Structures are given as structure tokens and as C-alpha cells.
Length: 307
Image (tube, rainbow, N blue to C red):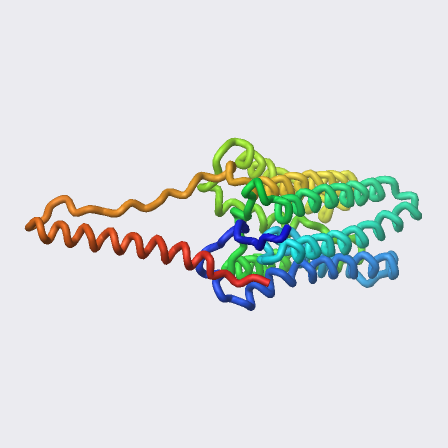
């Protein structure tokens, strides 16, 4: 574990030397988990009061929890500490839900949050293996987060929250932290890399993820409209299944075998030349420019800001 992160994913040149983006991509998952912890204890302290606030902040920020796999951390020890810290925050919040519903003898929600805790633990183990213990396997991030994605997420959240905020403040509904908003944004983000996928497994995982998220969102809106418990059950079950496929996709994107290899650019030669001297000079110039562009591309990828 001494070697630094030279095998970690090297995103495009736009990530280079952007300290603010690096700081945001590392801190936002922590803020999201702290918000989840706050919302969990806020709900259990206030109980079924008429405040109308349950899980709003954590539902807004939950998308960034799923993006922690792309956090640009150079040291493997730092990455290990980073993911374990996020896992602890997640488990404490989920455990608070489990204890609360167990005291209320609510079997359904107790089982639901127990499954969430188990699923999160399995995912974090896989994530740590892929990001820390990958020395002899060549695993790296292939679907990386870049600056424009952060602004895209924020713009999408503005539109979605314009619809969901009235729901969260409806005192007749108990709306704890839900990940449907995050999933709705994530599958669009994952789909940007679809043209690079190779093999049926990763493509099928993304397709199934999209379908399950659609079912979960549809049944959640039916529950909001009709207040029938069966729709809430369907939405919650669909959400946890969608989380399984989301986690599976994130783990699969570490493996280079699931992506098409990059094609190396070939130098172009002129078909016809006016003279032999001009032809040789042009060909040499073309090769030099091509080699320079290739080397510049490699060097620009290495100029990436890390913690």
C-alpha cells in the first residue's frame, strides 16, 4: 500500500489544477452523510410532530454520497480512512432508524433499514477493495466526475426540488431520506459513458437500474397522491433494489474489461505531393506534430490535482 495513486483514473485535462473542484468533490460526500445523520436524529427527537421537515436536506445531498468513488485522493491510506469514515456516518444514521422502528414494533421499516445497513456495508467493502487493494489488478475509475457534472447536478436538483419540496413539507406525510432524487440524476450521468461500454453485463445493469428507478419514482408519486400504504411499500422495495444495481454499476466501472480500449491516433500522410522533398518534409512535420500531441495528451492527464 505504499505506492501512490499512479494507476488511479486520470480524467480529462479540465480537472487539472482545479483545487476548488477537488475540494468540493471530496467534501460534498461528507456533507451528505452528515446531513443524513442530522435528519435521522432530528426525526427521532421530534417524532411525529407537525414540523413537516423530515429528510429534506439529506435527500437533496444524497447524490454526492454515490459519487465518493471518484474522489481524487492520492494516498491509499487517505482513501481507506475517507471511505471508512463515510461508512461509519452512514451506519450510525441507519442504526438510529433501526433502533427507533424496533422500539415501535414496526417490522417493515426495521427490516428495510437493516437491509440498507447490510447493503451499504457490502458496497463499502467492494469500494475499498477497488480503490485501495487493486495493486495487481489495474482497477481504476472509468466514469469520473468532472466540473461540468457538478453544475449539471445542481441545475437538475433545482428542477426536481421545485416539485418535491411541497411534498416534504406536507405534514400529513412522513418523508424520510429517499434516494430516488439521487438515482434519477445518476442514471443520466452514467449514461454519458454508454458508448464506451463493452459487454452485456454493464449495459444490462444500467438498463435495469433505470427501469427500477422509474418504477420507484412512479409508485412514490402514487403514494403521495393516494396515501395508500401499498404504494409506499412498492416504492421502498424498488428503491433498495435500485440501490443494488447502482452499487453494482459503480463497482463494475472500475474494471477495464467493461470498457472499450482507447484507439491510438495514427499520423496522416498526404496522398499526393508536388515534389519528393516537399513530401518528405510534410510527412516528418506531420509525425512530429502527432507525437507532440500524443505526449501533450499524456502529460495533461497527469497534471491532476489531488489531496
